[in-house]
Image 1 (cartoon, rainbow, N blue to C red):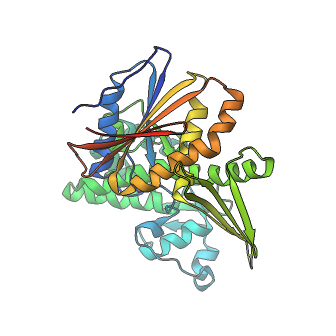
Image 2: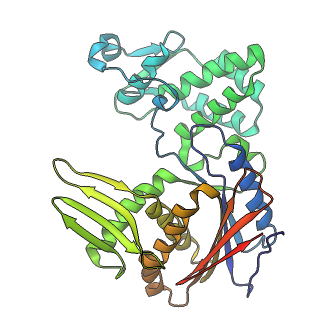
Length: 355
């Protein structure tokens, strides 16, 4: 059965979310299919809607994410004393060490030309330009104002490989990685951009950090009656009650011997919904959210949805008393599922349907 977008008035605004995958990997089959699915749903309400891609970059920091190991900088005097590095001579397992301690200077002219070619998607033109024009010697910066060596290194190596054997995956990955490091705020994965030019990307790391700040502010200022915080032996546990009265764990803070904090998945989902609702409240006080997720995440996403209504919704109603939010969590068992489980939430209510 096809999912129909039902609106009760022309003033409603719909938010469609898909495309979740773990960056810096290439988008998975599920990510691409889920984004295409919600994009097709969006066509039912093209004017009063937006398309978002939610991508997990929490574990991504440098080249370690794809296999390089960290070295002790003090053990490599050449790194510490260098003013420039020849990227053709770099040892791959040293890259993470460079990323950790330095950034690298690439001229604005080269960066803009690379950005321009990447936007067109012409892989051969990009590879030829990099091999012919990008100088192997790059200047080391110690104030981290430049670009990661790993971004430059990988796009150079992938370009050489693409020109020699036509292997596409590495150069596509390298383009995504380079643009992410160069301009994260405006980055759209190559495989998404081909079909979805008006896509807005939301990064999970940004939501995670925003959740840390927001939940502590809510606690400090008493902004939610349903946010529960217990403290014992230097450990603070943030939680709220689910619709059925069970406990949803949101965040754990420890101060003994050092401060350490972990945000739980339900808090990340709750904060994602809170942030997108805040962003689009100016469009309408009646908001519908449609999010496609793999079925194995159903419990965590549903708990996060209930946490959104329990912790954040009260504060939203203070500034917008007429606000009405309906969230439709659409779960697929397979990357291209013909059957969907849809859990629909509104304030204090839930319904389940199978399509």
